[in-house]
Length: 246
Image (cartoon, rainbow, N blue to C red; front, side, top):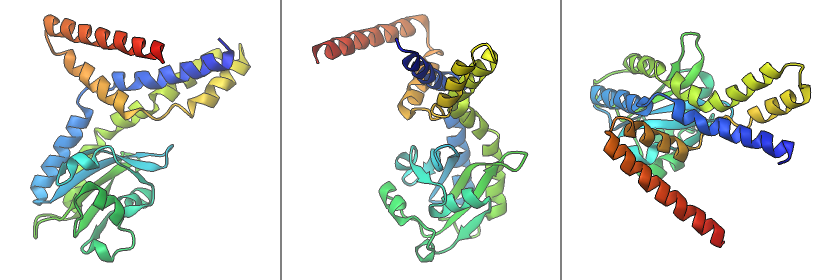
């Protein structure tokens, strides 16, 4: 195997292992925060997105209320939409009539099947003031809260989002660690590893979902785990047979 191929496979492996190492329940915790905020505001929907600086967008990790299933997994370019504006500026924003606001991403809202009339969005920030993501509240019931209250829920999300960010960055961090360990012993290899580290930051959403399923399997008994393993082995054998026939 060529050295370049070996390095790239190492990069892929480092990125792929990240979701499996994230504590189970991160997205569930974010969904619980979103649901609590929706109830507190009497809102039509609430969503929480994590900022992916490498990709230059917001990745919606959790949502509650109208269109929640369609929202989760969406990516919104940094600076696009009200949430994108909040992420890029770090400023909270409340818009009573979104249709009249040029920042409103109507096309994105329409894809979810729920177009709100009003939106309140606040940045999720860490203790150092770094923006980690955005919490958005759609169609707040009259007299049921303001940006200050939304900020309280954003603070709760700030305790969870770093785990999601760590999952995204872990693959690259592992490669950086290997490169640092090499030092001057193999400068060329260390340079190559650092070069591909920047390309291994994004976690495949399907792989992350699989990792979450495996985390759930850990809580089952031995019999159930063995049954799941047999199913996986059978499917893997089937997939190999299909590849050979191609």
